[in-house]
Length: 223
Image (cartoon, rainbow, N blue to C red):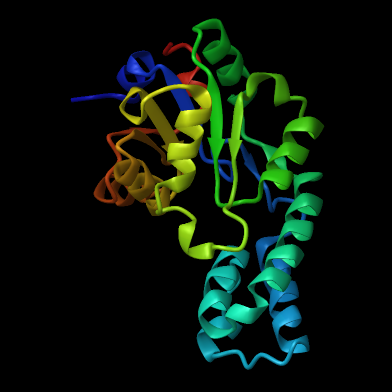
């Protein structure tokens, strides 16, 4: 059975999703608050929100649904979301062990990239605040203005691999969502499920994860 340690050792480059494996971006400014702000933008612009959209507390889901219910407002909602993400990034909580993991990757000669449905400015803000930027070679954030190209679409994974100079099959993606596992598979990349909550390991394995870890810290000595 392939383990997370096996995949890390075999990889020429390591990719990580941002929210979860690297930090909790909405730890200080909550996701429901940001989602509510985005829905206010839609209402202010005259959009009628279906019941399912009114109930959403995930800002990325609000953005996805905006493309369906009010495509002409995608840019406005995108701009608002990016501003809120950057604000949230200034008070995000770093994931335990990630700094040491980045350092271990550097020592092993494995470049690190971040592949996320969060915006690149928010990711770069957090990396600067947390003083992690020196360990990250590539940041592949949300494709601006085209929500349908967010993960599970493989574009962001493929872009990161190209930026790192590795073939997708020689990289491994660490993520904590179904979309991460699906994006990795769609791009031809191996994947490690970051399953830090009960039930997550089974769900992410069903979504296509090649291996599982309960902690980023557990991967530090697996180079």
